[in-house]
Length: 210
Image (cartoon, rainbow, N blue to C red):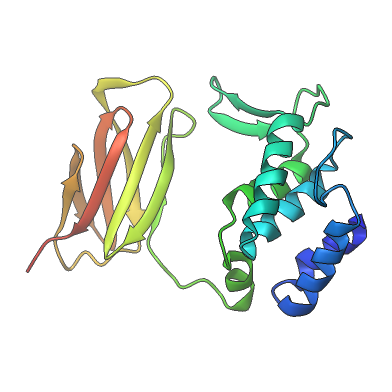
């Protein structure tokens, strides 16, 4: 059944109807059926089931698998390094990369995302770069109605100091303003240089009204 689940993952964007039929049959005849028992989860299989249940909007299956992953696969925040990984109960110094990659993809999945990503190249869009990771990270970075919404997460807050990063690929022929949060903007050649207090909080940037 594990092989069928992996086939579903790769087939889902190309032949979604056939892939979903195979997926439902594979789940029904595996530990991912009506109840997930206490037997050890296969990390990649669990990740594929979680990802595709989110891709296709199957909330009951998603909830069961997410709860089992939470219970068995050791999701862990490393506060010192600012990293989130799954230890998988292996007691290894470094988390398994391939397993963690599948689980991270499943964690980030939303309805239709895998199909959309595979169907066409991503539209070019501005990018946030030069964040002072791991001391500072962005737990949210999204465009909404022409505004860029950011959420800063800081390992060791120090509001008296500043952190800085750049947003490249923006149209700086128009003025940009901060409409939420504290900080400053400086426009360059198709880039914005952002400075903000070194503390957790939301920032919103948008073009100034004409």
